[in-house]
Length: 511
Image (cartoon, rainbow, N blue to C red; front, side, top):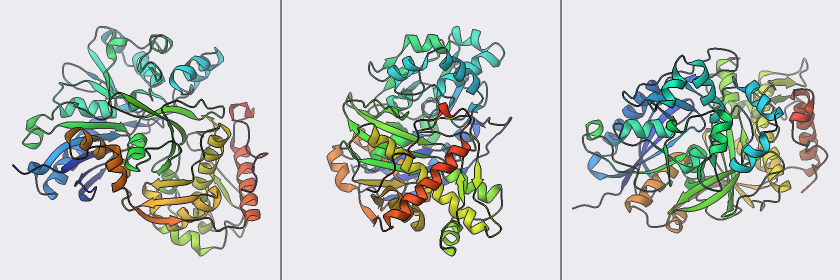
C-alpha cells in the first residue's frame, strides 16, 4: 500500500476561507479560496454567519482534494482559524443560535471597562496572560447569554455548546461527535488558565459563563477525531488544530526561544517564542500559549494590531483609491516620501500596546500637496510603525530580542512594505518561500500526528527563505519618522490617555 504523504489544511480566516493540500516537502499542491460576507449590524459590531463559513470550508476542502489528485493520498487534516470569534449552537441539531461575534467586535467595551474599574483585570491577566478587552471571547459569550432570549437557561441546562471557529468546524467535520478546542484557541477566550491548563472557575464566575457550555481542550497535534465519511467520500484523520497566529508560528518554524514571526492579514499579529516559561508583560502585551505538543507547552509573547490589511481593504472599498491591493506597492514608490502624512488605522480601536477600544482612525499631516499616493503610502507605513511599537514593547519587557523577523500574510508579498518594515524595525526581515504559513502550520501539526513528519526538528529543515530584507535607512530619518508616528498616535488615543501604555516617544533611539 502506498504511503499517504499529503495533508489537507483548512484555513478559516476573518474575511475568507481557504483549503490547501501540501505534500511532505511542504509544497502546496492545490488551493481553493472563498471570501464571505461581513455583517455590521451596529457601529463597532462585526458578525459572521457560520453557515457561510461551514459551506465555504466544505466546498474549498473538496476542491483542494480533487485538484491535488484525490483523497487516497490524504494522510490527515489540520484546522486553523481566526481566534476569539465565538459561536454558540444547539447540541441536538448543530444549529447556531446567533451569528458569530467576531474578534474585531467592540460591543462589550463598556462591560469590560466596568470589570476593569472593579479591579478584575489583575486576576484576568495573572491567570490568562490577557487583558480585559472586548477582543477576547469571554465578554462576547456573556453578551450572547444575556441578549438572546432564553439562551442562558438553555446553556445552564446543557443544551448549548460553545466554541471558537476551530471548535465549530471540528464539531461539524466529525458529524457532531467531537466537541473540543485546542489549547491555543482556549488560551484566547479569557476563560482558560494558561498555567494550570484548565478552564478556570474564577473566570467562569467573573463572566457568568456556565461550565456546561465548554469544550474539551486538547494538544495542537494528536488524535482529534475522524471526519464524517459522507463529507469527502472517506474518513480523514483530524490531526492538528491551532489558532491562526499560533499555526503561523509553527509554519514559520519558530521553534527556538527568541524566534519571532509577524503575520499581516486583516490585522497584524507578532509572536515571539519565549520557551517553556511564560514572560509577563509590563507593556500590555499578551502572554499566550504558542503551542502544546505531547503535553509540552511552549509559550509566546504576542502583540496584536487590529488593522493591517484591513486598512488597504478600506482604501479599496471605502475610499475607492485602488481597485486591487497590489496597487499600493506602485503608489508607495510613486512618491519619494509620505509628505508628512500619517494614518493611524484605529477603525475598531487600537490594540497593543495601547488597548484603547474607543480610539478611532485618523489621517493627519494633510496639505494641498497631499495625493492619493501619499495616503496609500501612509496606510502601508502605519502597519510597519505599529509593528515597531510591538517589537519595542517586547524588548522593554525583557524578552529575548529577535535577530530577524519572519513575515507572512498578504501584505508581506509587497516588496516596498517589507523593506520599509526592515528599515523601521532596524532588523533583518525574512520572507519565506511559501507565504501560506498559517495553513502550513496546521498541516505540520496534522502531519506530526499522522507520521508524515517525525519531529519539529525535521520541520525546521523544510522551512525555506525566499528573500531577506536588510535595513538601509539613515538612522536620523528613521527617528524622525518614528517621532512623527508617535505624535499621530497621541492625537488618536481617547483622552485621558491613561488607557494607553507608557509612550515609547521618550525611548526611541538609534539602534
